[in-house]
Length: 256
Image (tube, rainbow, N blue to C red; front, side):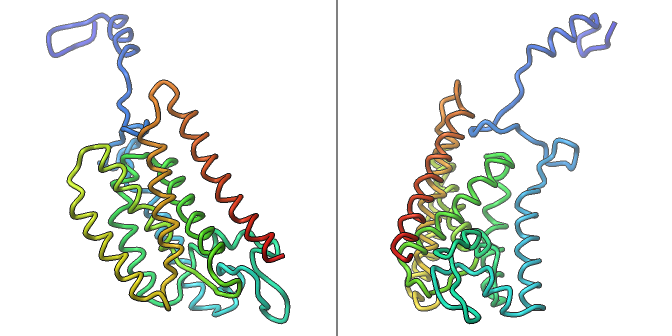
């Protein structure tokens, strides 16, 4: 017999009851994880890893210098080091690597602060894989819009597009949970005002692109039908990525 709060139960009854208990899930379908450091704890692992990667690349830039920036910055098509370089030259990796590049201390400070503020709660609600997906797709969305609109020789770098994507995702998730969004909206408005007041130094295209794509990606996560949740989420994200790839291909055809 197995000791229970109301007496004793037979082992077979306990096993049968355990098989009928459903695992708790978040609104996006992710497992509800503990936060006490146990095996099931989330601990914002993805958020911390992303921050660590950004800091590591920033230190690499400080040590190595402009060679890293020239190699991985978002660039349409320009002459670098005496030869043509850029996304239009087949260097598609720049769409993602630019999102981990920073040069100025204030730039990485603000971006990592935003990631640390928005990342943990979103990671807990979306789950690690879904959160990372939203982050990377937002980064791609910001890069794609910047590549489409900016001058072909204009460089862009920073995690701002991905962070603005988290802003969009937080708005969608908060709306789904009927949370008070006024503080978040106020913070987003302040950041947008700063963006458009410094268009000579800030790539507003990456911010807007990341914001829109992040909101769309999060909507696909939290509004997916329960019966076919995973399939809907995968197909929806694949559709968003296909549109972004189409934008990149269109711009590339213009520059080639």
